Amino acid sequence: MTFKEEIKRRRTFGIVSHPDAGKTTLTEKFLLFGGAIHVAGAVKSNKIKKTATSDFMEIEKQRGISVATSVMGFEYDGYKVNILDTPGHQDFAEDTYRTLTAVDSVIIVIDAAKGVEAQTRKLMEVCRMRQTPVIVFVNKMDRPSRDPFEILDEIEEELKIEVRPLSWPIGNGPDFKGVYNLFDKSLYLFTPNKQTLEEGISLDVHSSQLSEEVGVSSAETLREELELVEGVYPDFDKNPYLEGKLAPVFFGSALNNFGVKELLQCFLEIAPPPRPSKAEERIVEPDEEKFSGFVFKIHANMDPNHRNRLAFVKICSGHFQRNTNYQHVRLGKQMKFSSPTAFMAEKKSIVEEAFPGDIIGIPDSGNFKIGDSLSEGSPLNFKGLPSFSPELFRYIENDDPMKSKQLAKGIDQLMDEGVAQLFVSQFNGRKIIGTVGALQFEVIQYRLLHEYGASCRYEPINLYKACWLETDDQGELQDFKRRKNQYMATDKSGRDVFLADSSYMLDMARENFKSIKFHFTSEF
Ligand code: G4P
Image 1 (cartoon, rainbow, N blue to C red):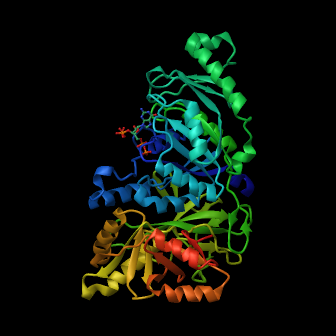
Image 2 (cartoon, rainbow, N blue to C red):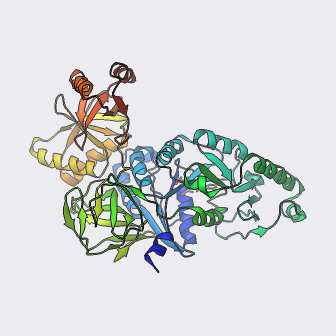
């Protein structure tokens, strides 16, 4: 196979959802199709159960599971499919955002009874920022569900994206009879059977066969609804989908393996192969000869005696080869990797080569930070891994004066992994940890102790948001920094950050310093 064919057959995507909508179940069905697993239940959910929010061992166990299921690759119908898993728990939202920078498209799973939920909305914002193509799967149609038109309206309104149904449900809950697939014009009849695959019946909705299959009244309703669908929604066009402006929508039931195969087939047909990546220097095309890639995730070793980590690298261009020298751009040094791993289903194995779209794991003893770039040709710095303003802030203090070195090192490494964000106050030099959820504070404390032998304690600090500043007026910026000295901090890359203690304070700052833009993300 040629290099270009290798790239073209790759589909690297993420499945995202609000917890419990059915992401794990759908992932598992995909893997079953790919022959990557053979029994249902093989993929453990990496979600941290609600009841276990303070159970450290549970967190550790989950970390172990989530490294195994971080990336799942399989071959299907000539395609190389790479599914990137994202943590469902909202406290790990930042991790999910970063994973989304490494995918070329996304499938969003929505619960048919609940519709669009909070987490889905946030994730969609990230997709929109990056113009990621999105397909929606409305799941759990075997349960009493909301009206499909209502769900579509809600998706359009709440996720701010146009929709185009490509399948249509016939009833729901106990009356769920199946779906009509508008993409290949076939009827799929539902039997609540978890393992066998349904075969589509190719038929026109106006044929009498439809009434024979689903009954006269359901057939009538389907015809009416489809007429409305065709009237309301424009014909499906691949281009707006690829531009991230239009989401095709499928209905089904992941648990019953229903509607999943059609989703996968349509996905493979329309979803984009690896897309160009933005570097500070230029746009990088996947079929460029020279290898380049970036680190979007770092996973610490579970074994505290071996502090080795695994850096997840998304290949952006070129042909990656084992034991070949590549430049670690930030450190400005050549490195070669003797045991890069690929992820097939839930197994890891050493690979000799990899192509754009693939994710490889590189064992690392502390050389990598999230966002680091590797390149074979001229140095490239990939963009698109912004830090988002944390929601919660606390001072972190050393609780064991004998271990201050260990603490500093531990904090440093955990921040490189992206567990949380560290800010250093320019006013008093104290370290401030910012997180998305309360759970991270416990994870940090636990890991500092178990992996670095350092104890820390937290002290409260009342902050609302971290803002990165942008202005052309250096004079005003200096004035601002002087006046707000108490609230200025430095982030991990040495940039100025304004830590506002309330939305009122931020509004006032905006009012008084008109040339300064206050951003809630580090990239703008
Ligand atoms: P998540 O990864 O998005 O958090 O969701 P997950 O797949 O774990 O699914 C959440 C729950 O919803 C699971 O039940 C799962 O079995 C169920 N589910 C998924 N798809 C469907 C579907 O199409 N129909 C119905 N009726 N249920 C579905 P659970 O009881 O929470 O977990 P489990 O003990 O069954 O694993």
